[in-house]
Image (cartoon, rainbow, N blue to C red; front, side, top):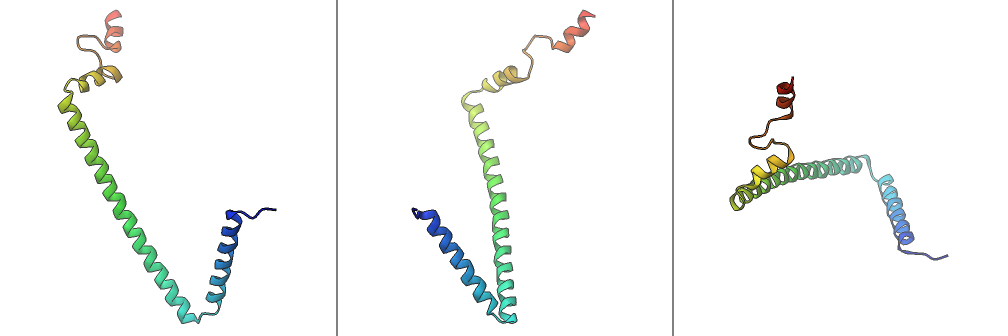
Length: 105
């Protein structure tokens, strides 16, 4: 039977968890409370950083979208009209399907 890296990693992770549990069981109640408070503080800092990063990412992507749209319009001024006609707008001078149906009645 071969022992590969996954087996070693699983063994080491289990050993670390067992050691951590042993150390935690030997702590006093005061040390356990201090450890819990420390972990809560670190988790709150991580949460705040993640929220701030999410806000910065949203601003960054909105800025990229706006700059990209402006650059696209600047270099290809007729492209917006082309895409509107292609994907949902009606062609200039053509009647909309609803207009044709009411005209035929």
